[in-house]
Length: 80
Image: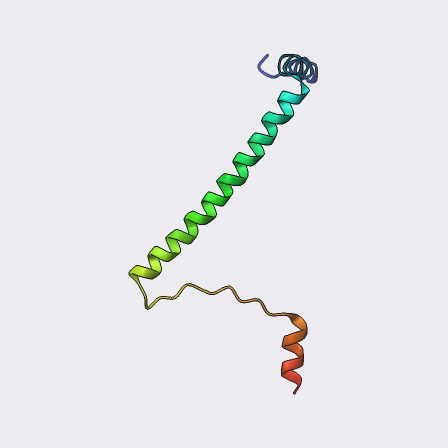
């Protein structure tokens, strides 16, 4: 009684396509994707701002730096 079958969802999908049209639906989903990307970008900037604030309050505690080491470089430097 409380759940919908596949046929119910199919009818709902068809009604949505008829009301909004294919172009409007894809445009809406594109806008949704842009919103999600902006949200993730804002969260990342928020984390960076929080790290800067913590570093300014506690200068003796340095945040870990982002260091990348190539595999070929680390092996050749240890052999000499």
